[in-house]
Image (tube, rainbow, N blue to C red; front, side, top):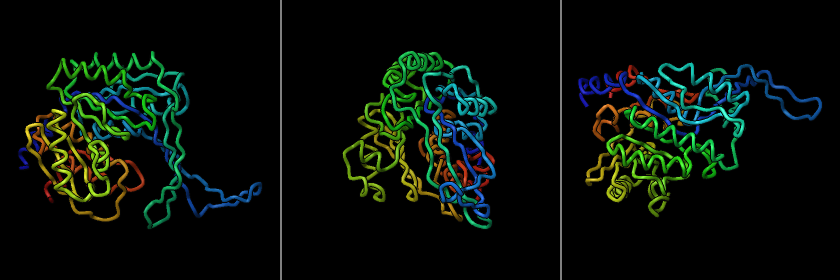
Length: 343
């Protein structure tokens, strides 16, 4: 991609309107100073003293963070939080982001706020070390009235946006935002706006999703297509063939991340592209890299990028994010441009 084409694509970002429908969670970081370690007098167990607490939107919120960092014009989170302290913190963080409209994000007492609590040990001169995470999730089905409001939001926004991102982050089907009812509304949007870029990612796999753009890693592709997961990771040629076959059957683009082997994009017409990963430039933390890829693929496609161009921009973003330690990072257009000039 030439510098001129890079500028032309990213120059359109400020005019884009993108909705993110998915599981928004609160990433709460507990920064621990090991120099202040104690032993509990009552239990004789080690005590970790927290010297700083910080929170930021996670899961679908990480995608939103990346869209904000890219300078997109208007962003619509579609999701929910609980009527609890974590929900208050999450709503405040989302509402404080540039360009974010909260019209379609609901607070409900029928759900608790999805929270990842991450204790992290910080030692001077050493990379941060994350301890066992403490998660708060919903394990019961999403109430019908909440699901109906989410589905209605997706359909109401469809005519107003340039792209839609779906992120299914929950462990149990139909306990989050991307339920069967919401997917039914997405199917109707596909019929009504067949050219709208709709990009989906799900930690439980994308089987049963309507004909939207699919984004996954190699193991998820193997699980979806009946392949061997371990063999799929490093065999770029095999992944490429499988992605091409899936794109032709699914009738939409398929994007597959391959960690240090780069990324693949396959089209329904049988064409495909492979973009190698950029070299590692020091210590890395891969948390959030996949969400950065999702945000950049969707933004680039909404701006009119080809599959190859979208992959190149997403690869730059992933390389930037993995070098941000102890946080779930983002990549701005300025950072992308600087790395693009070096690559």
